[in-house]
Length: 209
Image 1 (cartoon, rainbow, N blue to C red):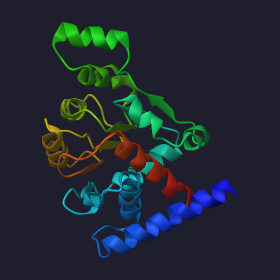
Image 2: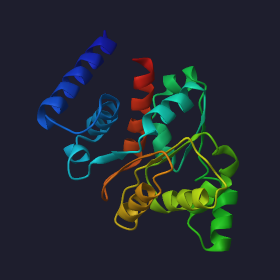
Image 3: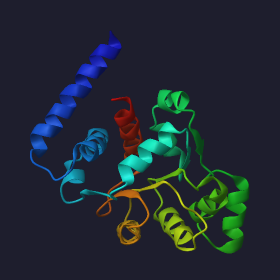
Image 4: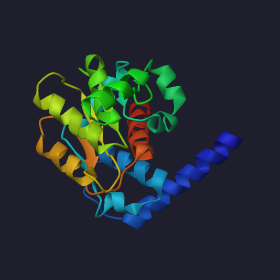
């Protein structure tokens, strides 16, 4: 009964989003993702001035990777907290997050880097053909872009939606410029771990529909 009530509330919320936004330039699959982010944040800017940007292969790459039981590399534990655990279980998705690893913290201090930068480097061996989701740290996204430029990783999809005032917008702009890398991002400072998780949940929804 509770599930039915929850589903009814979600459906009504999605209807409100559709009605308030009206016309938009997203295709059906992209709009599923954008709506999920708006639903999570109650922030309509993600369809407007902070609009979301999709590489032409982003959706299909993300769906195929998840269907095949890919690894999911995330920058912070907050992304994990927002993921639907049934999806992870059903599709046998391993989630990797090194942000709390003591070895990573020590290396960051030794090399005068952010923990997020080192955490991404430590996950290098898991990135090829898999999904990287960054919702918090712009330095993590910049490091991943650098690794792609160095041709040491070839991820299936980069979800780059870090939040903040220092380098958040710039890191996203750089991701968009490296357009050969399949990506999902947005314009501006807004973002966050909940947004990154919402994008992944939306990709699972597309698989199940």
